[in-house]
Length: 197
Image (cartoon, rainbow, N blue to C red; front, side, top):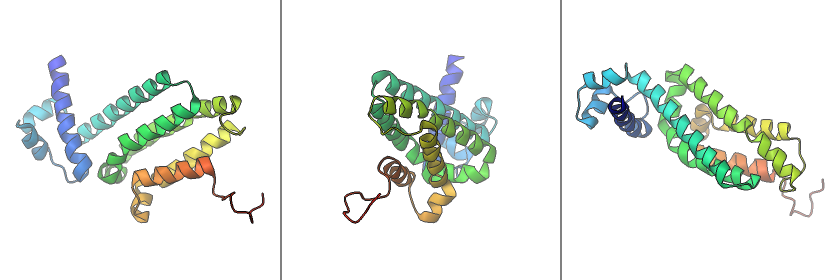
């Protein structure tokens, strides 16, 4: 069983390297097999096809993110550190996936994309407890945690949509940075003496 898992990992690693660089559509099973110096039949023993490999990649990515986010929560107590390190992790880990792979699976494999969106939304909704804790401890302004979380989720949903990123010629990292900046700092420049609130 362990040998099979190792083979699956090798296949996923080769597929990930190609699909992040070229996207889902352009990558073929022949290319993955060639990269691994094995026959397609050997790959088919572990994965029924390219779609199954894509599902395996998403499942593995989610597990890696879960593990890394759990480690951040264990390492820090300060809600602001947890939040900022979690956002940094997501920015680094997810950025490469958005350029080609996620842009294509949103149309090529819509059910897989919806599954990933559901996962992402759940992770974002998890920041509610950080907002509550930060507000309680005076680290954040006293805000309604539900509204703050939904506002952040809504912004992330809108601007990390592959179609929006492509239309606006933005990277995932640029969009996420902008959302985080607006969410944490607002849009009003309070240093301007003409502004009154």
